[in-house]
Amino acid sequence: MAGRVINLPGRETRKARVRKKIRGSNQEPRLNVYRSNKHIYAQLILDTEGKTVVSVSTLSKELKKEVLKMKKVDAAKKVGEFIGKLAKQKGVETVVFDRSGYRYHGRVRALAEGAREAGLKF
Image (tube, rainbow, N blue to C red; front, top):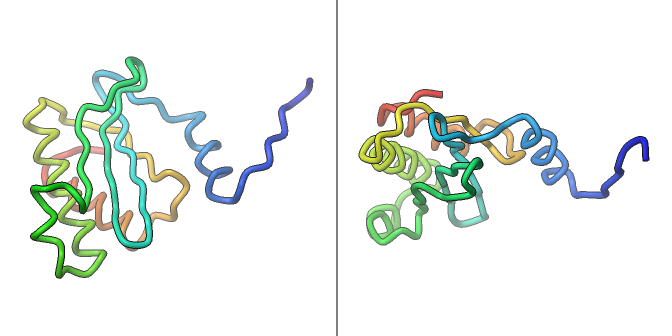
């Protein structure tokens, strides 16, 4: 077989193409973003071990009340700041950003900027 052809929807194709090149290690975990219509989720993942170090979303009990009345972009920035704070507590300084096939604007960008403001480097 010269190459495997897999029929995936657009975002899934972009996600697979980027994921081939990005790997999270113990030194630099992967900061993965998933965005639904109402909520946004962020995880720090160690691909070498297959483990999630930290996970935060707009549904997390620490943030749920706070982001309830916010706009989605502001809530995403708050999630980024919170995951950055938790990552620092776990001793993580640098990460590899995985936007999961989403364009880098709007909520994805706000989450990334919030994480940078909290002290994460990527």
